[in-house]
Length: 188
Image 1: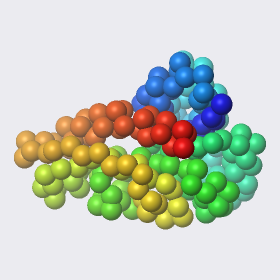
Image 2 (image 1 turned 90 degrees about the horizontal axis):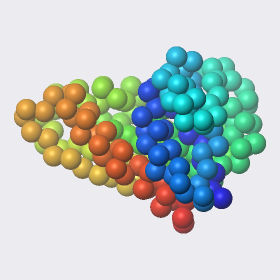
Image 3 (image 1 turned 90 degrees about the vertical axis):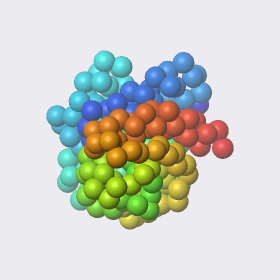
């Protein structure tokens, strides 16, 4: 059985989407969701879905090996950043080479890097009058949004699109493609 660990910082809509995709698949198990936000809605989702959830603070994440050792104990086949906003420490990348993936709400390399997440990305896309945007699923390395690209999906934009409508189009792509790409990676 393939084991997944998910990281999330916010509402957890991608976590729930991934859970729903795999809930009847006896070959994939979500071991745990880890969150850095004690007020994140993902905690409520996990409780409702009966997924174990662990909260950690910045000290445990980047100044000690507590979170890293927890991950090592889980020994996951894949670590999925599903709306997780902190940079992954280099020690995690070295401990789990090509086993950590992220989803970014733009077509990298555009609109990536520190501070480029969520609404910030959609506002930048709108301000630059882009005619398309999308998602990028990529491996995580020691730099923001810089790892090898696994999959990209695009959506067309019009001048009528707002940051909110752009977000809706991007979320649709996330929900459609993220679980499928995870499944493809686990089957390799």
